[in-house]
Structures are given as structure tokens and as C-alpha cells.
Image 1 (cartoon, rainbow, N blue to C red):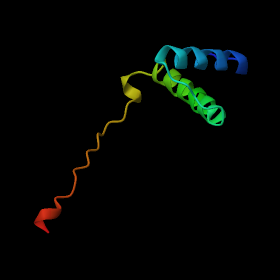
Image 2 (cartoon, rainbow, N blue to C red):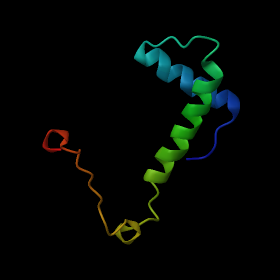
Image 3 (spheres, rainbow, N blue to C red):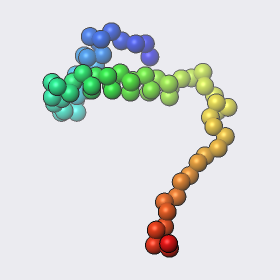
Image 4 (cartoon, one colour):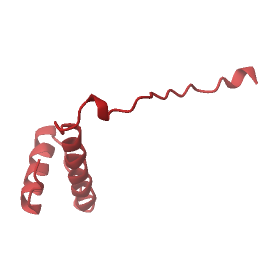
Length: 71
């Protein structure tokens, strides 16, 4: 996914917000646009076809909550 121009990014963001029925307050818009751009970049990494199963970690970590009643 190529990096869009700032205008194209804003247009895409506006389209998604309108589709979801969300009104972003003007004072929060710059931060939301930054987050949207970062989310797009992360989504592109997930769809990277050059990564195979060998690139996945070999371990899975699982954290269990502490049972505080036993202490």
C-alpha cells in the first residue's frame, strides 16, 4: 500500500468517518489523522505477501491472571 498524499489520506479518513457516522471534533482531527496513517501502515505490514510462515515467531506466550484469593 503506497503512502497517499496528505490530501488523499484526509479524504480516505473522512470517507471512513462518514461511513461510520462519526464526527471528529476539529481539535482532535490532527491526532486522529496521525493515528489513521499509522494504522494504514501497520495493516500494510500484515498483508505483506513476502513474509512466509517461517517469519512467524516459534513461541506463543500466554499470561494467566494471578489468583489473588489463594494468597
